[in-house]
Image 1 (cartoon, rainbow, N blue to C red):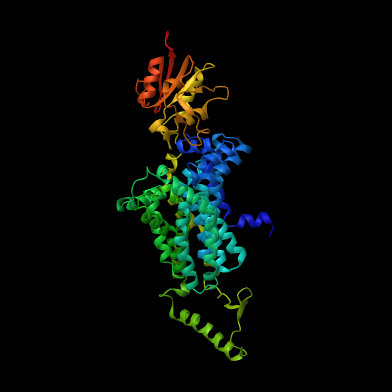
Image 2: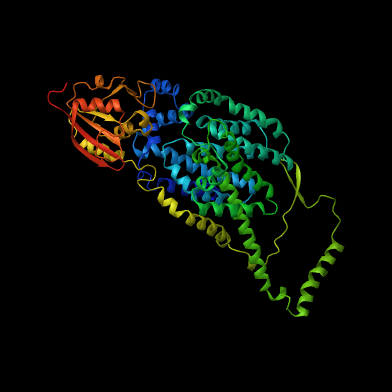
Length: 566
Protein backbone atom coordinates (compact mmCIF):
# COMPACT_ATOMS: atom_id res chain seq x y z
CA UNK A 1 0.00 0.00 0.00
CA UNK A 2 1.23 3.51 -0.80
CA UNK A 3 2.27 5.94 1.93
CA UNK A 4 -0.89 8.10 1.56
CA UNK A 5 -2.99 4.95 1.75
CA UNK A 6 -1.22 3.80 4.89
CA UNK A 7 -1.67 7.25 6.42
CA UNK A 8 -5.39 7.23 5.74
CA UNK A 9 -5.70 3.82 7.39
CA UNK A 10 -3.61 4.86 10.40
CA UNK A 11 -5.45 5.08 13.68
CA UNK A 12 -3.73 8.36 14.61
CA UNK A 13 -4.60 10.47 11.58
CA UNK A 14 -8.27 11.25 12.13
CA UNK A 15 -7.86 12.03 15.88
CA UNK A 16 -4.95 14.34 15.10
CA UNK A 17 -6.86 16.18 12.37
CA UNK A 18 -10.02 16.54 14.45
CA UNK A 19 -8.06 17.82 17.45
CA UNK A 20 -6.15 20.27 15.26
CA UNK A 21 -9.32 21.61 13.66
CA UNK A 22 -10.98 22.07 17.05
CA UNK A 23 -7.83 23.75 18.35
CA UNK A 24 -7.75 26.18 15.43
CA UNK A 25 -11.45 27.00 15.58
CA UNK A 26 -11.72 30.58 16.91
CA UNK A 27 -8.20 30.34 18.28
CA UNK A 28 -7.73 34.12 18.15
CA UNK A 29 -11.09 35.03 19.72
CA UNK A 30 -10.36 34.68 23.47
CA UNK A 31 -8.37 37.57 24.91
CA UNK A 32 -4.76 36.86 25.79
CA UNK A 33 -4.51 36.66 29.56
CA UNK A 34 -1.78 37.46 32.06
CA UNK A 35 0.07 34.13 31.80
CA UNK A 36 0.20 34.44 28.03
CA UNK A 37 1.55 37.98 28.34
CA UNK A 38 4.24 36.50 30.58
CA UNK A 39 5.10 34.07 27.78
CA UNK A 40 5.22 36.90 25.23
CA UNK A 41 7.26 39.17 27.48
CA UNK A 42 9.86 36.46 28.19
CA UNK A 43 10.05 34.93 24.73
CA UNK A 44 10.56 38.22 22.86
CA UNK A 45 13.62 39.23 24.89
CA UNK A 46 17.16 38.74 23.60
CA UNK A 47 18.59 35.43 24.75
CA UNK A 48 21.05 36.94 27.28
CA UNK A 49 18.21 38.82 28.98
CA UNK A 50 15.99 35.73 28.86
CA UNK A 51 18.61 33.54 30.55
CA UNK A 52 19.23 36.25 33.14
CA UNK A 53 15.51 36.35 33.93
CA UNK A 54 15.30 32.56 34.28
CA UNK A 55 17.98 32.73 36.93
CA UNK A 56 15.61 34.80 39.05
CA UNK A 57 12.09 33.68 38.17
CA UNK A 58 10.05 31.19 36.13
CA UNK A 59 12.85 28.70 35.45
CA UNK A 60 10.23 25.92 35.35
CA UNK A 61 8.90 27.47 32.13
CA UNK A 62 12.31 28.24 30.69
CA UNK A 63 12.29 25.48 28.06
CA UNK A 64 8.95 26.69 26.75
CA UNK A 65 10.16 30.30 26.60
CA UNK A 66 13.18 29.20 24.57
CA UNK A 67 11.01 27.30 22.10
CA UNK A 68 8.63 30.26 21.82
CA UNK A 69 11.59 32.61 21.37
CA UNK A 70 12.74 30.61 18.34
CA UNK A 71 9.17 30.29 17.02
CA UNK A 72 8.32 34.00 17.25
CA UNK A 73 11.67 34.84 15.65
CA UNK A 74 10.42 33.07 12.53
CA UNK A 75 6.63 33.47 12.61
CA UNK A 76 6.13 36.69 14.58
CA UNK A 77 4.19 37.35 17.78
CA UNK A 78 0.59 37.63 16.62
CA UNK A 79 -2.09 35.92 18.71
CA UNK A 80 -2.28 33.09 16.18
CA UNK A 81 1.48 32.68 16.10
CA UNK A 82 1.77 32.60 19.90
CA UNK A 83 -0.94 29.96 20.27
CA UNK A 84 -0.28 27.81 17.20
CA UNK A 85 2.48 25.66 18.82
CA UNK A 86 0.00 24.58 21.49
CA UNK A 87 -2.60 23.60 18.87
CA UNK A 88 -0.03 21.54 16.97
CA UNK A 89 1.21 19.89 20.16
CA UNK A 90 -2.30 18.93 21.25
CA UNK A 91 -3.00 17.40 17.84
CA UNK A 92 0.16 15.33 18.22
CA UNK A 93 -1.00 14.34 21.72
CA UNK A 94 -4.22 12.96 20.21
CA UNK A 95 -2.16 10.93 17.72
CA UNK A 96 0.01 9.43 20.46
CA UNK A 97 -3.09 8.74 22.56
CA UNK A 98 -4.55 6.67 19.72
CA UNK A 99 -1.27 4.79 19.26
CA UNK A 100 -1.02 4.06 23.00
CA UNK A 101 -4.61 2.80 23.11
CA UNK A 102 -3.84 0.51 20.16
CA UNK A 103 -0.89 -0.96 22.07
CA UNK A 104 -2.94 -1.41 25.21
CA UNK A 105 -6.16 -2.87 23.80
CA UNK A 106 -5.09 -4.21 20.40
CA UNK A 107 -8.20 -2.67 18.88
CA UNK A 108 -8.39 -0.06 16.13
CA UNK A 109 -11.79 0.96 17.47
CA UNK A 110 -10.31 1.64 20.91
CA UNK A 111 -7.43 3.56 19.33
CA UNK A 112 -9.48 5.87 17.12
CA UNK A 113 -12.09 6.37 19.84
CA UNK A 114 -9.37 7.28 22.37
CA UNK A 115 -7.94 9.97 20.11
CA UNK A 116 -11.38 11.39 19.31
CA UNK A 117 -12.42 11.33 22.97
CA UNK A 118 -9.35 13.39 23.81
CA UNK A 119 -10.56 15.94 21.27
CA UNK A 120 -13.99 15.88 22.98
CA UNK A 121 -12.53 17.23 26.22
CA UNK A 122 -13.16 20.98 26.69
CA UNK A 123 -9.84 21.48 28.49
CA UNK A 124 -7.98 20.02 25.53
CA UNK A 125 -9.47 22.72 23.30
CA UNK A 126 -8.82 25.39 25.94
CA UNK A 127 -5.11 24.63 26.32
CA UNK A 128 -4.66 24.01 22.60
CA UNK A 129 -5.49 27.72 22.35
CA UNK A 130 -3.17 29.02 25.05
CA UNK A 131 0.41 30.24 24.75
CA UNK A 132 1.72 28.17 27.64
CA UNK A 133 3.61 24.89 27.98
CA UNK A 134 0.73 22.61 29.01
CA UNK A 135 -0.12 21.28 25.54
CA UNK A 136 3.53 20.46 24.82
CA UNK A 137 3.82 18.66 28.17
CA UNK A 138 0.65 16.68 27.40
CA UNK A 139 2.10 15.68 24.04
CA UNK A 140 5.43 14.64 25.58
CA UNK A 141 3.78 12.45 28.25
CA UNK A 142 1.47 10.82 25.67
CA UNK A 143 4.46 10.14 23.43
CA UNK A 144 6.41 8.77 26.39
CA UNK A 145 3.57 6.39 27.26
CA UNK A 146 3.47 5.06 23.71
CA UNK A 147 7.27 4.66 23.65
CA UNK A 148 7.11 2.81 26.98
CA UNK A 149 4.51 0.36 25.65
CA UNK A 150 6.66 -0.25 22.56
CA UNK A 151 9.72 -0.85 24.74
CA UNK A 152 7.79 -3.31 26.90
CA UNK A 153 6.60 -5.17 23.83
CA UNK A 154 10.11 -5.58 22.42
CA UNK A 155 12.87 -4.23 24.68
CA UNK A 156 15.84 -2.74 22.89
CA UNK A 157 18.14 0.24 23.60
CA UNK A 158 16.63 2.45 20.90
CA UNK A 159 13.08 2.10 22.19
CA UNK A 160 14.10 2.79 25.78
CA UNK A 161 16.10 5.81 24.62
CA UNK A 162 13.01 7.28 22.94
CA UNK A 163 11.04 6.75 26.14
CA UNK A 164 13.74 8.48 28.19
CA UNK A 165 13.86 11.40 25.75
CA UNK A 166 10.08 11.98 25.88
CA UNK A 167 10.03 11.77 29.68
CA UNK A 168 12.95 14.19 29.94
CA UNK A 169 11.24 16.67 27.62
CA UNK A 170 8.06 16.51 29.67
CA UNK A 171 10.00 17.10 32.89
CA UNK A 172 12.06 19.98 31.53
CA UNK A 173 8.93 21.71 30.22
CA UNK A 174 7.06 21.20 33.50
CA UNK A 175 8.42 19.40 36.55
CA UNK A 176 5.00 18.29 37.81
CA UNK A 177 4.74 16.00 34.78
CA UNK A 178 7.36 13.72 36.38
CA UNK A 179 4.53 12.45 38.57
CA UNK A 180 3.52 10.43 35.49
CA UNK A 181 6.30 8.02 36.54
CA UNK A 182 3.99 6.75 39.31
CA UNK A 183 1.52 5.39 36.79
CA UNK A 184 4.24 4.16 34.46
CA UNK A 185 5.79 2.06 37.23
CA UNK A 186 2.46 0.23 37.54
CA UNK A 187 2.34 -0.21 33.76
CA UNK A 188 5.76 -1.85 33.78
CA UNK A 189 4.94 -4.07 36.77
CA UNK A 190 1.68 -5.33 35.27
CA UNK A 191 3.24 -5.86 31.86
CA UNK A 192 6.03 -8.00 33.32
CA UNK A 193 3.56 -9.90 35.49
CA UNK A 194 1.44 -10.72 32.43
CA UNK A 195 4.36 -12.51 30.82
CA UNK A 196 6.16 -9.77 28.93
CA UNK A 197 9.93 -9.84 28.58
CA UNK A 198 11.47 -9.50 32.06
CA UNK A 199 14.33 -7.47 30.56
CA UNK A 200 12.06 -4.47 31.15
CA UNK A 201 12.95 -4.63 34.83
CA UNK A 202 16.61 -4.09 33.87
CA UNK A 203 15.99 -1.36 31.29
CA UNK A 204 13.29 0.74 32.99
CA UNK A 205 15.30 2.13 35.97
CA UNK A 206 18.27 3.33 33.83
CA UNK A 207 15.85 4.92 31.36
CA UNK A 208 14.12 6.81 34.18
CA UNK A 209 17.46 7.93 35.59
CA UNK A 210 18.55 9.19 32.18
CA UNK A 211 15.27 11.10 31.87
CA UNK A 212 15.69 12.74 35.27
CA UNK A 213 19.24 14.01 34.74
CA UNK A 214 18.31 16.94 32.41
CA UNK A 215 15.65 18.08 34.86
CA UNK A 216 18.04 18.52 37.81
CA UNK A 217 19.03 22.15 36.99
CA UNK A 218 15.35 23.04 36.58
CA UNK A 219 14.57 21.38 39.91
CA UNK A 220 17.27 23.33 41.72
CA UNK A 221 16.22 26.68 40.26
CA UNK A 222 12.56 25.88 40.69
CA UNK A 223 12.97 25.01 44.34
CA UNK A 224 14.62 28.37 44.97
CA UNK A 225 11.86 30.24 43.11
CA UNK A 226 8.83 28.22 44.25
CA UNK A 227 7.95 30.44 47.20
CA UNK A 228 7.36 33.41 44.95
CA UNK A 229 5.66 31.61 42.08
CA UNK A 230 3.43 29.07 43.83
CA UNK A 231 2.29 30.92 46.92
CA UNK A 232 -1.09 31.62 45.33
CA UNK A 233 -2.06 27.90 45.14
CA UNK A 234 -4.36 26.80 47.95
CA UNK A 235 -3.58 23.80 50.13
CA UNK A 236 -4.86 20.53 48.64
CA UNK A 237 -7.69 19.36 50.89
CA UNK A 238 -9.86 16.26 50.60
CA UNK A 239 -12.73 18.42 49.40
CA UNK A 240 -10.43 19.85 46.74
CA UNK A 241 -9.59 16.33 45.60
CA UNK A 242 -13.28 15.43 45.28
CA UNK A 243 -14.07 18.50 43.21
CA UNK A 244 -10.92 18.25 41.10
CA UNK A 245 -12.02 15.68 38.52
CA UNK A 246 -14.71 17.68 36.67
CA UNK A 247 -12.27 20.61 36.57
CA UNK A 248 -9.62 18.39 35.03
CA UNK A 249 -11.93 16.90 32.41
CA UNK A 250 -13.61 20.25 31.81
CA UNK A 251 -17.22 19.17 32.33
CA UNK A 252 -19.26 17.19 34.85
CA UNK A 253 -21.19 15.48 32.07
CA UNK A 254 -18.04 14.44 30.27
CA UNK A 255 -16.58 13.20 33.55
CA UNK A 256 -19.59 10.93 34.13
CA UNK A 257 -19.36 9.58 30.59
CA UNK A 258 -15.64 8.88 30.98
CA UNK A 259 -16.24 7.07 34.28
CA UNK A 260 -18.90 4.85 32.66
CA UNK A 261 -16.58 4.05 29.75
CA UNK A 262 -13.74 3.35 32.18
CA UNK A 263 -15.96 0.88 34.01
CA UNK A 264 -16.80 -0.81 30.69
CA UNK A 265 -13.10 -1.11 29.84
CA UNK A 266 -12.28 -2.59 33.25
CA UNK A 267 -15.08 -5.12 32.79
CA UNK A 268 -13.98 -6.10 29.26
CA UNK A 269 -12.88 -9.71 29.49
CA UNK A 270 -9.40 -10.29 28.14
CA UNK A 271 -8.42 -6.61 28.34
CA UNK A 272 -8.65 -5.96 32.07
CA UNK A 273 -4.90 -5.70 32.58
CA UNK A 274 -4.62 -3.05 29.85
CA UNK A 275 -7.49 -1.11 31.40
CA UNK A 276 -5.87 -1.21 34.83
CA UNK A 277 -2.62 0.09 33.33
CA UNK A 278 -4.41 3.01 31.65
CA UNK A 279 -6.32 3.75 34.86
CA UNK A 280 -3.07 3.82 36.84
CA UNK A 281 -1.53 6.25 34.34
CA UNK A 282 -4.61 8.47 34.64
CA UNK A 283 -5.19 8.48 38.40
CA UNK A 284 -1.91 7.88 40.22
CA UNK A 285 -0.19 11.11 39.12
CA UNK A 286 -3.14 13.12 40.43
CA UNK A 287 -3.10 11.33 43.77
CA UNK A 288 0.67 11.68 44.00
CA UNK A 289 0.61 15.43 43.40
CA UNK A 290 -2.27 15.78 45.86
CA UNK A 291 -0.23 14.02 48.56
CA UNK A 292 2.89 16.07 47.88
CA UNK A 293 0.78 19.24 48.04
CA UNK A 294 -0.03 18.60 51.69
CA UNK A 295 3.26 20.30 52.57
CA UNK A 296 4.22 23.97 52.53
CA UNK A 297 4.03 24.26 48.73
CA UNK A 298 1.01 23.12 46.74
CA UNK A 299 1.11 22.06 43.09
CA UNK A 300 -2.48 20.88 42.88
CA UNK A 301 -3.85 22.80 39.88
CA UNK A 302 -5.85 21.24 37.07
CA UNK A 303 -3.68 22.62 34.25
CA UNK A 304 -0.53 21.27 35.93
CA UNK A 305 -2.05 17.77 35.60
CA UNK A 306 -3.44 18.17 32.10
CA UNK A 307 -0.94 15.52 30.92
CA UNK A 308 -3.09 12.79 32.51
CA UNK A 309 -5.90 13.37 30.00
CA UNK A 310 -4.42 11.10 27.27
CA UNK A 311 -4.49 8.17 29.71
CA UNK A 312 -8.10 8.99 30.58
CA UNK A 313 -8.95 9.09 26.89
CA UNK A 314 -7.17 5.77 26.21
CA UNK A 315 -9.08 4.15 29.06
CA UNK A 316 -12.37 5.54 27.78
CA UNK A 317 -11.43 4.39 24.27
CA UNK A 318 -11.12 0.87 25.62
CA UNK A 319 -14.60 1.30 27.06
CA UNK A 320 -15.93 2.29 23.63
CA UNK A 321 -14.40 -0.85 22.12
CA UNK A 322 -15.98 -2.91 24.91
CA UNK A 323 -19.38 -1.35 24.21
CA UNK A 324 -18.99 -2.04 20.50
CA UNK A 325 -18.00 -5.67 21.15
CA UNK A 326 -21.05 -6.10 23.40
CA UNK A 327 -23.30 -4.50 20.79
CA UNK A 328 -21.94 -6.79 18.08
CA UNK A 329 -22.44 -9.87 20.24
CA UNK A 330 -25.98 -8.82 21.03
CA UNK A 331 -26.70 -8.13 17.36
CA UNK A 332 -25.44 -11.56 16.33
CA UNK A 333 -27.58 -13.25 18.97
CA UNK A 334 -30.65 -11.38 17.81
CA UNK A 335 -29.89 -12.18 14.19
CA UNK A 336 -29.32 -15.87 14.95
CA UNK A 337 -32.61 -15.95 16.84
CA UNK A 338 -34.27 -14.80 13.66
CA UNK A 339 -32.66 -17.64 11.62
CA UNK A 340 -35.29 -20.42 11.34
CA UNK A 341 -32.74 -23.24 11.48
CA UNK A 342 -31.37 -21.97 14.81
CA UNK A 343 -34.54 -20.95 16.61
CA UNK A 344 -35.75 -23.07 19.51
CA UNK A 345 -39.17 -23.49 17.88
CA UNK A 346 -37.76 -24.68 14.54
CA UNK A 347 -39.15 -28.03 13.24
CA UNK A 348 -37.44 -30.95 14.93
CA UNK A 349 -36.58 -32.67 11.66
CA UNK A 350 -34.78 -29.62 10.35
CA UNK A 351 -32.90 -29.26 13.60
CA UNK A 352 -31.79 -32.90 13.50
CA UNK A 353 -30.53 -32.52 9.95
CA UNK A 354 -28.68 -29.37 10.86
CA UNK A 355 -27.02 -31.15 13.77
CA UNK A 356 -26.39 -34.60 12.24
CA UNK A 357 -24.89 -33.49 8.92
CA UNK A 358 -21.89 -31.66 10.42
CA UNK A 359 -21.39 -34.49 12.91
CA UNK A 360 -21.35 -37.10 10.17
CA UNK A 361 -18.95 -35.08 8.09
CA UNK A 362 -16.71 -34.56 11.10
CA UNK A 363 -16.67 -38.29 11.90
CA UNK A 364 -15.78 -39.17 8.33
CA UNK A 365 -13.08 -36.57 8.26
CA UNK A 366 -11.57 -37.78 11.50
CA UNK A 367 -11.42 -41.37 10.24
CA UNK A 368 -9.83 -40.54 6.90
CA UNK A 369 -7.54 -37.71 7.99
CA UNK A 370 -3.90 -38.65 8.72
CA UNK A 371 -2.61 -38.11 12.20
CA UNK A 372 -0.56 -34.98 12.64
CA UNK A 373 2.18 -34.38 15.16
CA UNK A 374 1.57 -32.20 18.17
CA UNK A 375 1.79 -28.50 17.33
CA UNK A 376 0.65 -28.91 13.72
CA UNK A 377 -1.91 -26.40 12.61
CA UNK A 378 -0.06 -23.65 14.45
CA UNK A 379 1.91 -20.73 13.05
CA UNK A 380 5.14 -19.51 14.61
CA UNK A 381 5.73 -15.85 15.38
CA UNK A 382 9.23 -15.24 14.07
CA UNK A 383 9.81 -12.30 16.42
CA UNK A 384 9.15 -14.13 19.64
CA UNK A 385 9.46 -17.76 18.58
CA UNK A 386 6.10 -18.51 20.19
CA UNK A 387 3.52 -20.79 18.66
CA UNK A 388 0.22 -19.12 17.94
CA UNK A 389 -2.89 -20.98 16.77
CA UNK A 390 -4.55 -20.10 13.51
CA UNK A 391 -7.62 -17.97 14.12
CA UNK A 392 -10.77 -20.01 14.27
CA UNK A 393 -13.10 -19.52 11.33
CA UNK A 394 -16.01 -17.22 12.03
CA UNK A 395 -19.17 -19.00 13.12
CA UNK A 396 -21.32 -16.07 12.07
CA UNK A 397 -23.11 -16.74 8.79
CA UNK A 398 -21.85 -14.51 6.00
CA UNK A 399 -25.20 -12.75 5.61
CA UNK A 400 -25.11 -11.78 9.32
CA UNK A 401 -21.67 -10.18 9.31
CA UNK A 402 -21.78 -6.42 9.73
CA UNK A 403 -20.38 -4.05 7.12
CA UNK A 404 -17.35 -2.06 8.34
CA UNK A 405 -19.23 1.23 8.37
CA UNK A 406 -22.11 -0.21 10.36
CA UNK A 407 -19.71 -1.96 12.74
CA UNK A 408 -18.15 1.37 13.65
CA UNK A 409 -21.51 3.07 14.15
CA UNK A 410 -21.90 2.24 17.89
CA UNK A 411 -18.38 3.50 18.62
CA UNK A 412 -18.90 6.73 16.71
CA UNK A 413 -22.24 7.22 18.43
CA UNK A 414 -20.62 6.96 21.87
CA UNK A 415 -17.90 9.45 20.89
CA UNK A 416 -20.54 11.83 19.53
CA UNK A 417 -22.62 11.63 22.71
CA UNK A 418 -19.57 12.48 24.83
CA UNK A 419 -18.87 15.40 22.53
CA UNK A 420 -22.42 16.69 22.93
CA UNK A 421 -22.12 16.49 26.71
CA UNK A 422 -19.13 18.81 26.58
CA UNK A 423 -20.56 21.17 23.95
CA UNK A 424 -21.56 24.00 26.35
CA UNK A 425 -18.04 24.07 27.80
CA UNK A 426 -16.52 23.85 24.30
CA UNK A 427 -18.41 27.03 23.43
CA UNK A 428 -17.45 28.71 26.69
CA UNK A 429 -13.70 28.26 26.19
CA UNK A 430 -13.96 30.20 22.92
CA UNK A 431 -15.68 33.31 24.27
CA UNK A 432 -13.77 36.59 24.22
CA UNK A 433 -13.76 36.57 28.03
CA UNK A 434 -12.99 32.85 28.36
CA UNK A 435 -9.64 33.47 30.06
CA UNK A 436 -9.86 36.98 31.46
CA UNK A 437 -12.38 39.71 32.16
CA UNK A 438 -9.69 42.34 31.59
CA UNK A 439 -9.84 44.14 28.26
CA UNK A 440 -6.16 44.85 27.58
CA UNK A 441 -6.88 45.36 23.88
CA UNK A 442 -9.55 47.97 24.62
CA UNK A 443 -7.23 49.87 26.97
CA UNK A 444 -4.51 49.94 24.33
CA UNK A 445 -7.03 51.19 21.78
CA UNK A 446 -7.93 54.14 24.01
CA UNK A 447 -4.27 55.04 24.56
CA UNK A 448 -3.49 54.79 20.84
CA UNK A 449 -6.47 56.94 19.86
CA UNK A 450 -5.27 59.93 21.93
CA UNK A 451 -1.53 59.36 21.86
CA UNK A 452 0.93 62.18 21.24
CA UNK A 453 4.65 61.85 20.82
CA UNK A 454 6.37 62.24 24.20
CA UNK A 455 3.46 60.92 26.28
CA UNK A 456 4.19 58.83 29.34
CA UNK A 457 2.32 55.82 30.71
CA UNK A 458 1.79 54.40 34.18
CA UNK A 459 0.47 50.83 34.52
CA UNK A 460 -0.61 49.50 37.87
CA UNK A 461 2.15 47.40 39.44
CA UNK A 462 3.20 46.78 43.03
CA UNK A 463 1.08 44.06 44.60
CA UNK A 464 -0.99 43.96 41.39
CA UNK A 465 2.02 43.43 39.11
CA UNK A 466 0.94 39.81 38.53
CA UNK A 467 -1.98 41.19 36.46
CA UNK A 468 0.60 42.08 33.76
CA UNK A 469 -1.31 45.27 32.87
CA UNK A 470 1.76 47.02 31.51
CA UNK A 471 2.76 44.08 29.29
CA UNK A 472 -0.85 43.52 28.17
CA UNK A 473 -1.32 47.11 27.03
CA UNK A 474 2.15 47.24 25.45
CA UNK A 475 1.42 44.08 23.42
CA UNK A 476 -1.68 45.59 21.80
CA UNK A 477 -0.24 49.08 21.10
CA UNK A 478 0.54 49.78 17.42
CA UNK A 479 4.17 49.98 16.38
CA UNK A 480 4.18 53.77 16.21
CA UNK A 481 2.69 54.22 19.67
CA UNK A 482 5.37 53.91 22.35
CA UNK A 483 4.63 56.01 25.48
CA UNK A 484 7.47 56.31 27.96
CA UNK A 485 7.04 54.19 31.15
CA UNK A 486 6.97 56.34 34.28
CA UNK A 487 7.47 55.61 37.99
CA UNK A 488 9.79 52.67 37.33
CA UNK A 489 13.52 52.37 38.01
CA UNK A 490 14.11 49.57 35.47
CA UNK A 491 12.04 47.83 32.84
CA UNK A 492 11.24 44.16 33.37
CA UNK A 493 13.96 43.13 30.91
CA UNK A 494 16.63 45.25 32.61
CA UNK A 495 15.46 44.13 36.04
CA UNK A 496 15.88 40.50 34.86
CA UNK A 497 12.35 39.78 35.98
CA UNK A 498 8.81 39.45 34.68
CA UNK A 499 7.88 42.75 36.36
CA UNK A 500 9.56 46.16 36.24
CA UNK A 501 11.25 47.43 39.38
CA UNK A 502 9.48 50.40 40.94
CA UNK A 503 11.13 53.74 41.58
CA UNK A 504 11.83 54.11 45.33
CA UNK A 505 11.03 57.88 45.16
CA UNK A 506 8.18 58.08 42.62
CA UNK A 507 8.24 61.84 42.11
CA UNK A 508 11.83 61.64 40.86
CA UNK A 509 10.82 59.20 38.11
CA UNK A 510 8.24 61.44 36.41
CA UNK A 511 10.61 63.59 34.39
CA UNK A 512 9.42 66.44 32.21
CA UNK A 513 6.55 64.76 30.35
CA UNK A 514 3.54 67.02 29.91
CA UNK A 515 0.98 64.21 29.63
CA UNK A 516 0.76 60.67 30.89
CA UNK A 517 -1.70 57.82 30.55
CA UNK A 518 -2.64 55.85 33.67
CA UNK A 519 -4.09 52.34 33.37
CA UNK A 520 -5.45 50.90 36.62
CA UNK A 521 -7.55 47.92 37.66
CA UNK A 522 -11.27 48.48 38.25
CA UNK A 523 -13.89 50.74 36.71
CA UNK A 524 -14.24 53.51 39.27
CA UNK A 525 -13.93 57.23 38.53
CA UNK A 526 -10.75 57.66 40.56
CA UNK A 527 -7.82 57.61 38.07
CA UNK A 528 -5.43 56.63 40.87
CA UNK A 529 -7.33 53.61 42.18
CA UNK A 530 -5.23 50.50 42.87
CA UNK A 531 -2.00 52.51 42.62
CA UNK A 532 0.36 52.44 45.62
CA UNK A 533 -0.06 55.49 47.84
CA UNK A 534 3.37 56.90 46.99
CA UNK A 535 2.75 56.72 43.26
CA UNK A 536 -0.74 58.20 43.53
CA UNK A 537 0.59 61.10 45.63
CA UNK A 538 3.40 61.83 43.17
CA UNK A 539 0.99 61.94 40.23
CA UNK A 540 -1.47 64.17 42.07
CA UNK A 541 1.33 66.60 42.86
CA UNK A 542 2.20 67.07 39.19
CA UNK A 543 -0.85 66.24 37.05
CA UNK A 544 -4.57 66.81 36.90
CA UNK A 545 -7.03 64.42 35.27
CA UNK A 546 -8.14 65.36 31.77
CA UNK A 547 -10.02 62.19 30.77
CA UNK A 548 -11.24 59.14 32.68
CA UNK A 549 -12.59 56.32 30.53
CA UNK A 550 -13.42 52.69 31.15
CA UNK A 551 -13.10 49.36 29.39
CA UNK A 552 -13.91 45.93 30.76
CA UNK A 553 -12.00 45.60 34.04
CA UNK A 554 -9.73 48.61 33.55
CA UNK A 555 -9.76 52.40 33.90
CA UNK A 556 -7.76 54.45 31.38
CA UNK A 557 -7.05 58.06 32.38
CA UNK A 558 -5.19 60.88 30.68
CA UNK A 559 -3.37 63.21 33.09
CA UNK A 560 -2.09 66.62 32.02
CA UNK A 561 0.64 68.54 33.82
CA UNK A 562 -0.87 71.40 35.78
CA UNK A 563 0.48 74.88 35.15
CA UNK A 564 3.12 76.00 37.56
CA UNK A 565 3.84 72.45 38.78
CA UNK A 566 7.33 71.12 38.40
